[in-house]
Length: 178
Image (cartoon, rainbow, N blue to C red; front, side, top):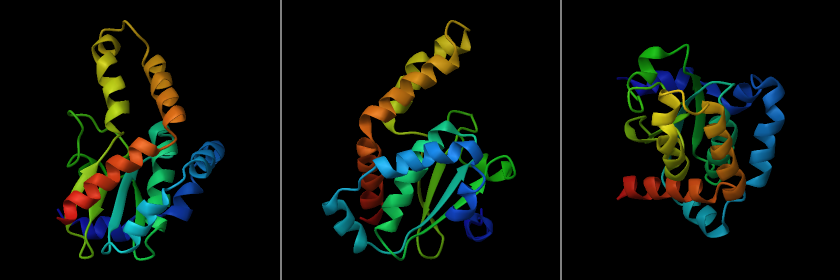
């Protein structure tokens, strides 16, 4: 799969956030609440070029939280580029990055400077995914509304303020470079 063409045809961050409509304020709230640790910012500054292709949609609740974190991480290295591609307009791409047979988003695809695949991360941090997986059988059986589980995940995000998410992503980045 040629990820380079997807990356070059994807939206820049500023164009994507214009699609958020009423959800832009929530996105901005998470951006403003996340503080990248100074030692992490210093480490990121000296890392090689990384391109990040995000598969998402403007209505995606996890994306309101996670995309601002990735944006701030990418801002720590002036050579890093972030692009967002819409899932529903690119089914062939998302089908290459399924999560347990689902087209779950957001998916963050990390590429090197030649746009060669390095690793994928998403649709959410391990702790949030564990919350979802814990209740998946009950959701599937109709015993609990998916919205109640999403509320639990939002509570996790609110409490964490992006700390575990950034640690998890940065661990993947550091590991991919070794």
